[in-house]
Length: 402
Ligand code: AVI
Image (cartoon, rainbow, N blue to C red; front, side):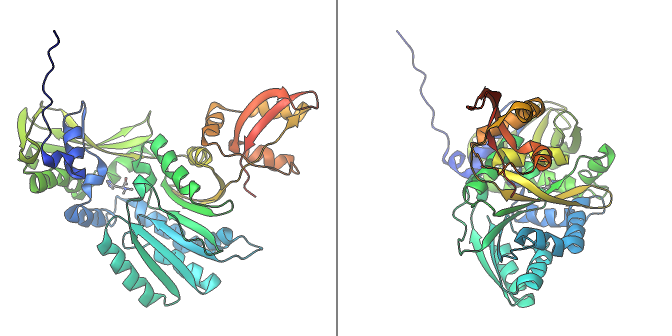
């Protein structure tokens, strides 16, 4: 006879987005809490303060790149010769503070600009619309409240070239395969030749990185601990944040900064609305955030796997932050025989081949060997074969940047 253990239904609060995330995270091993939980009203306010900290160079450096190269970025995105007009779309726009510099450059270039600002919370979007339309009257701002991390809805198609902005190194808060999925979803809503402008923090000296995520004035620590306060406020938790220490670690192997909350003593915490008792050992941590740092090659790789190729990149003098202009590729099939085929075969790397999973192919004009070799990272599949012209190498997928 089989004994069937009764299924105990989870409390209702565990079925809300916040409740289920907290329930799953705090019953996992090791314990985790998703970084999106940081951003309630208090967390968003603390994040704004982080962006002004002397140690947190990311926001300032990216803003300086936009201030210095805004016109060049817009010229490259429009395409120098065609001078096509751009529609701008921003994921996670917030108050669109840095975007203002790019919008100004777009106004200088094309006069009128349509700007679709997407964010999960409505209030910063309303502020952004009000401010931008007052300061730049030829910009039309359309706010859209949506969670782009669970899929983007259609982008406006008004015959203009579209440029999606995903700045602030927000892509760094996703595991690389999820980052590729997110960008692939964006790619699926674009046409060949549309653009993506990605702002990504770079790998650098570990002490610079650690200070950026563990500042002297303790704002990042308060931001991290606010997730426990949020659980107390919204789910009836009894976390005592003084019994936790904010920890920032550099994980070299994974190329990421990790944020943790370390329990200073052995303790039990109750989360009433979830009917949950959480036991923490002394020194045990709750992993709250990853912030991946990328080399230029790393960015090219995730772009290629998502169906984009790198068009141009800008950085600051210290090369701490990168702004990458990428182009949505198109599909095609090509055949290379003889020496040229063998040359390609030698240069294929597993990363490049894995990009084949993206399923995007393109047709090249094969005119220029040098540029083919330079854009090697965009080769996404290679197979030995006979294309009808004898022994050769069949590359049946490659990105076009054209
Ligand atoms: C939003 N995101 C890009 C920030 C980052 O740098 O990963 C979040 C942050 N966490 C601690 N400080 C800032």
